[in-house]
Image (cartoon, rainbow, N blue to C red; front, side, top):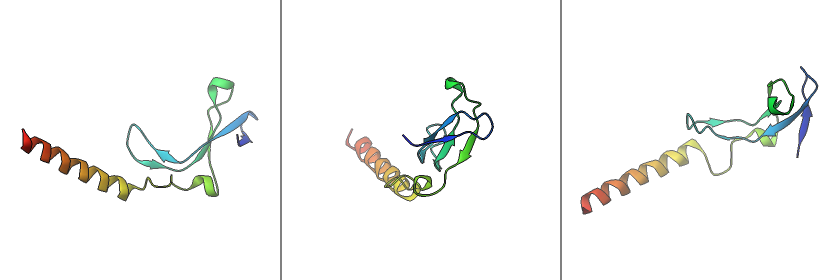
Length: 81
């Protein structure tokens, strides 16, 4: 596991990889998190380099295309009833 030391509280931070928000369904970049559950302060910091890029194969354009296809399938299924 890749770690970093928090500049505010000097606790160990963990790297949260880039992904998509479950609540807002929007992409986010990778970031460092100082975990409060393990005695940290809850601070976050931007991640630099490879880990900061968007998750492979999960671009917003690709997700929009998948969503359109699913909508088409739902409409076809409704027509079969």
